[in-house]
Length: 193
Image (cartoon, rainbow, N blue to C red):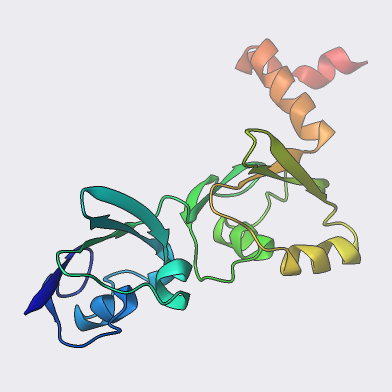
């Protein structure tokens, strides 16, 4: 019989029999119990005839890519499905995509929202890498209703970086704390006259 192997983060990895013509790579994944993670967070390496092809979930599930005898389909976590949130956010860090239709507002929420003490919501930026090694920069003004609507509609991509700027007063307070020793900060009002 014709066979192919599914390895990696499939629920039941192993050898699969290709019992008929027209069996696709998606069929092999299904026969292996599906992926152990949300499918949209996976990518696939197809090892075929001494060559390796990198495929994303959409290619595997929407294209009719036929399985061949001896194929090895490796299912792995995609690095393209995380986003980094920096700046005046309550919980800055790197977050996985919550679903395959993630929006900017979802990630601001995942980061605990903007810091009410230090954020300047007129300057929320997304930095997105392009294929020619440059970046597109998108700016949102969340103090305006239209900015909130755009944030709830704007699709984020893997490896995007979200940056929430700080309010000028927050930058000033941090600078003063760094320049003056703590004991002088508590009596800083004496010097303000």
